[in-house]
Amino acid sequence: MTRPDNRHDKLTRDTLLDLQDHHLVRIELVREDQRQVWVLTKRGHGEAKKLLEPKGIRVSALREEKYDPVTGKLLGAGYDDHAAAVTSTAAELHRAGIGHLLGFQTEVGHRLADGYVQRADLVVRAPAAGVPVLLLEIDRRTEDAHDLVAKLRRYWEWGRLLPKDAAKLTVDLVRSRPDAIEDIGHEQRLWRRFYPPTGREGLVPVAFVFADTTTAKVANTVAVLEEAGRRYWAPHRYGTLYPEAVTARDYRQAVPVVVTTLEQLTEHGAGAAVWRRLGRTGEQTLTAAFDNPDGHALYRAQEAHADAEDRRRRAAEREARRPVCARCGRKFTDERWEEITVHRTAVRAGDKSVCGPCRADDVAREEAAAEAARLQAAAPPEPEEVPEPDRGRRWFRRRT
Image 1: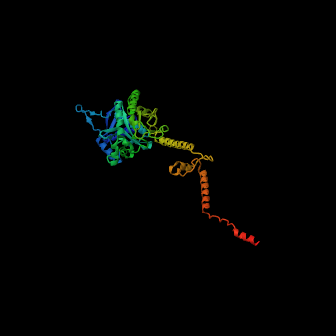
Image 2 (image 1 turned 60 degrees about the vertical axis):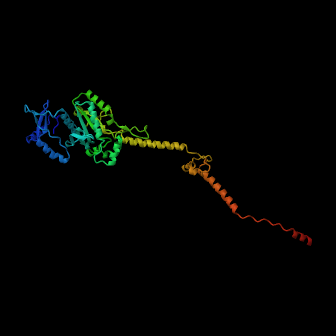
Image 3 (image 1 turned 60 degrees about the horizontal axis):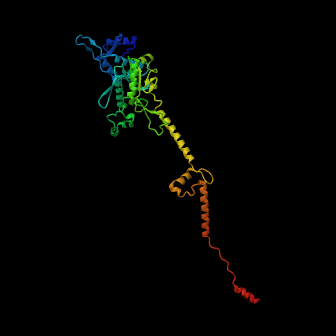
């Protein structure tokens, strides 16, 4: 309802005082720096549910008033510094235009297959800012670094679950082998029932925000996250026919993870370059950190370029092997080349060292010779000359 980091917001204070007069809010505790922490009363909680739940906004559990059984003093220790850090993180995101006031939810549960519920400290939906969904874990270094790795693992596992009503064929496929879920599109997985598409490759992004700690502790924790949690955030190489030409990385099964500190958010703003993506050096804006310039778009471009280069190379190699006519010196056409190499046509290809036109000339000569031979064989024999009989010649001599 308010921003713990804002000490001089008179409008917020006056609004809270007015809500207090109507018994809708109450002061739960006063922090050491004299800032007051306000929470909803039972009546205010009911009013909030009627206002927000029809809009699909979940209201957190009612914080009941608890009193010391001996002194009768109101116990307000339930709202601790961690909760204040969560609220401050939401405030900084909102101030930077990342999410509207009703676009934040706290303690959102994500149930795993074994029944364990992993609760996100804060969930923000800010599609207008290029962040359709973001799960945030706020750590005041009260948790061991390996506990944060375990949280990351559970988010990764939750992102690989199927909904209960998934098709039997899909369920059987996933049960057949551990990595079969990677062949199932994200739109068929459980997480898409809860959150919209992220607009980028990968599972639902997670941010770790460190508060009230030292730079050295943050660096050590991030180092553990990077090393021990590599399986969950790191991309993989694409399976490609051109491993040397394709340098892009496959982020489709990874959890995008960014880290920052509440101090950086407060000093520079959540919209500044204060977020570092695991696996990268340097800090970026939130949307830039979630973008994958070496991801699927680069893969498609590199794969297409490598494929085109491979086709050109194979075409050049084939052209270098193209036969040359031993008679006229011309290169064989594709048709003539195929004719002399394919078994069913090679037996009728004639002289395999000559090109198509020369082979056609040979065929024409052979056909002409065959036609001439046929015509000669079909022609009738010429009549023979009959010599004049000798008797007539003798008679002529007698008369003389």
